[in-house]
Image (tube, rainbow, N blue to C red; front, side, top):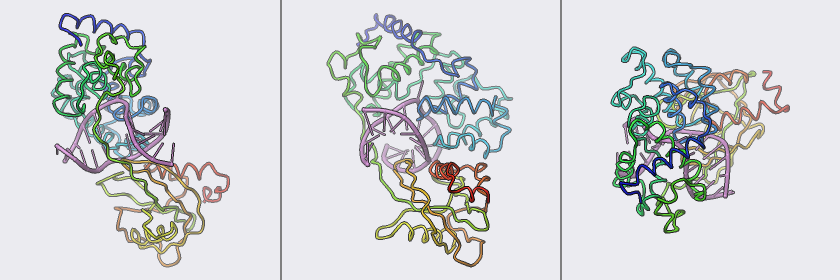
Length: 368
DNA sequence: TACCCGTGGCA
DNA sequence: TTGCCAAGGGT
């Protein structure tokens, strides 16, 4: 428990710990609004190490808001390829153009204006306002919720509305004026480095205020709500090769991987072999009559609530036209292997391309 | 308000 | 292998 007359000591312990243990991250070099914004969007639901890799590459490509606004959406998505949750990239792009048009190219500093940007919710608005502009705003993410669920031994699901409100209110009451940049980051850093899923209580600077620690039930907090279970699926897909070129199609603008390019394919149904499935899927999606010549790879990858196993084939046209009738795409192309680099693909399909590119056996295909 | 939206690391 | 989940937001 943190009593009113104890708040200052708690904050000092937390900030003192942070000043010693904060990680050296690229966006902590200088807290320009643009860099803070991009880092916050990139880190949503993303592991730190991957975020850093994409962040550095992104800054090389888009050094400022204007550079993002100037870019075509395809180039923005290409820079985001492999990171997932691609609406983040689309919203970043929209927001950049909005900042150029509505804010004269200057990143807005008013909380309401930041919050109004597409892709910016309560957490991100608070993070940008506090970290970039030193405003006294809270930034409650899953780290902070976990830390508070233990400090205050919250014994009901942390995602419940009342609990979220309590965490937000409590964070606000603890927030030291003028130090929100440090305080918010310290709380999140504590959740990431010490008070993680597996708690490392001996390292904790605020252990003496932790109710769950006192009760010996740290590992029972936070109380989680049931997640949607992961569904394993078997998928058939592959390279349809014709005159040295590979068939790709562009996915619809709605749903998963909106607007991404892909190789046709789909789920293997009950009682069906992978070869039968890939033939059926090509027929349904393109009206191509294809024949599998060879199995070229098995790729595993997860997305949203699925864990997919991709059975990948080298396919040929059995006959007829090389002009598809598209039923699951807005556009299609026949491209050389090397040209695939320029298209934005779902991670599983990109993985397949990378595997083929790295294999001596398929050099003839790459030369085509 | 549930549900959708990706991905790879880790135990 | 399988489940869990990492600096959430939009609808």
